[in-house]
Image (cartoon, rainbow, N blue to C red; front, side, top):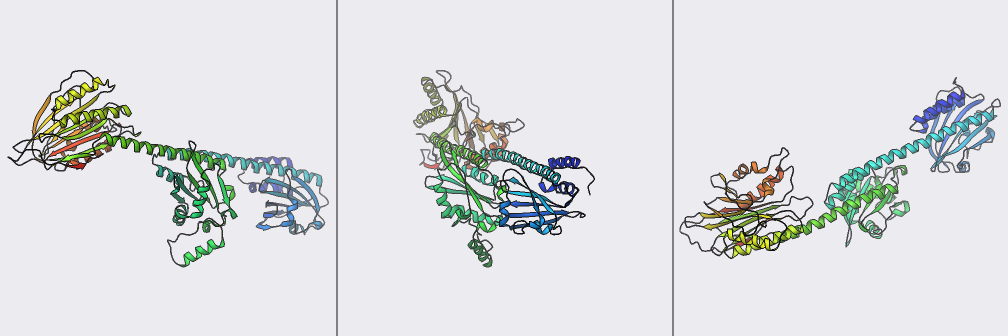
Length: 619
């Protein structure tokens, strides 16, 4: 027995309700005070799903400390008439008049054939209803009992409503956090397929048990990625995404629909997601065959929950970019809402669209960049040439770095490299003008200093708004097997020479930037290089790559170059580029290198121009 008065018991019940995470946690605080009411001998509660599915029944009898709990999921068709409306309903029924067909509580009340069953039926939510009743004898104040039942039900309903509200708020917070994380994850990649794969990985298992992502191409949906919480189902889901005609047809039909659609039950008949006996039989047959790698029907893993799928169209800037299909094998209460799926689809679509735009821009920029650089470099048995180009701007504006190698009428070769200030279309136009002007002049035999002066004059006449730097070096074979290196610079970083003995020296050059002043002349510097000596020309993107501590790659470049002694030009060019890229913690300038290794000619050999062949230049 409980000594508290009903008012104090009711107060304690409200306090318990404010803390409860489940309505069932209130049972002790509800049943015991009611059972302490004079004339009450039994308290019994029921929970129903839909009008007639009894989920459980709980009863506590006077003189007993242990409740009787019956967990069930049986159908009681005649109980459907008891389903309440929006307001609680209190009913008095003689125990002798209770019909077992509609009153499962009757079996607990048979010990009290002369008693009255006072019961309050009430709705908890849209999925079901409940009842709370007491068996009373003739001594009971039935009106007071009805009042206490109504008050207890008010607390239960308020508790249940609060639990639902807190659950919704928690889910909303979790959904918001998931959407924020999804945006960060998807926006961190500018690769279309990687973005799509991240969509699938983020959603499983937080949103669904499985996910399929398709990109819309001109020829129809193209499968990109699939994820499933069950490892053994991963391959099956991938095969469905790639090859299943039912899904392909469905996605094609829904390509223009904006709303998320949920499909279940008969709507999935004929699909690989159908909950059918045939799917189970197919699974058992696969297992009987001993094929551990066989793709098992997805629906066979439903684990007592019917399979549901949802399809969301991914739309950005007024066009469809793809779709995401979620597979659910979980209770209905754990299915996401349409609003959440629309928000996730919108974010995914924007990320995918950004990646697609980046891909288009990247292709356009790389195509333009290819036209600004030579497609091939000349090669004879006298020199070994190679180049490397690394784009540093993550936004992929076309850069202003350029290089070329030009055979000359006297058998020498001219090497040129330059860097236009800035990026973008204007820099690209000036890059094309500079490279082709220098190439034309050098092909005609113009000396490096004169070629730079005439380019400067052309830039001034064109009123170019940007300046540029450049260096031109010619390699002329000599009768003693060496080569004469003639270098002329216009404000450009000085080339380096890697000698065959491993020493590294800087070619001393100087000169004013191009496009700044009229009538500028440029002086040349001459020195000899021997067999296996290597000349390295580069733009400032190489030397100005900066580590986190602030040091520039320029400070270690001679040491890194010396370590490449004995390697061919291609290895030197690629190695220096990758080393600078790995060294760089800040800075995003392009890196261009042009490397020429002099192979030498035997003393007294014919120094006339050698036959040329072309090799593809590095881009």
